[in-house]
Image (cartoon, rainbow, N blue to C red):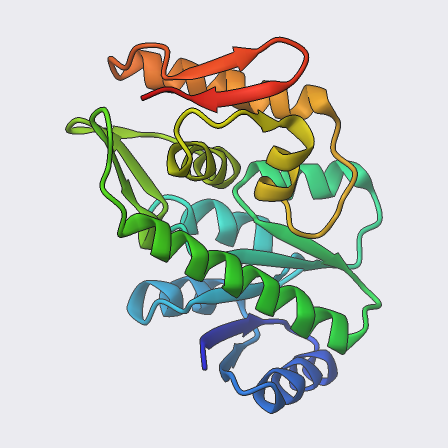
Length: 224
């Protein structure tokens, strides 16, 4: 049983989501305004947020931007916008996934539970012994090199967790795509390379040596 927050201003959609998520065994709180949602997340952090983009008060994009200043709670956007640019903006602001309206409520439940499973997997990884000065706080999506906090995006954090969990193993790019995204979206190898490049730069800036090594024509591995 997980505590979820649904932020949706259309009453019929909001109630439909609450009903299906409660039937799946979750505890659900529903809010219709963006500013109220932000205050609720600060006051009583949920395990996952379903967040509509178009909201009164402040919109969902702004809510997500503020949330990422203090929390790495998984966020799934609900959007009626079909423009890919809007979705990319949402993901860059720190959202973990998005679902386009109209949607199947059963699909929403499935996507929520997949995200929760991934979050629990991260929590299990956090219990492992850190290596080479790398410390992971999986519940808060925080990574430290020594005492320095690494300013990672959620995707960069998930990639780092997967690589660090299996030091020396070479991950193919398609495997890293599966780690970063669990909804089978189409992501190019170049996108993975870009995420890894940013991750390596942030590690290097914190004083780490080249702990993530590129294996030409294959992928990447974390070095002991």
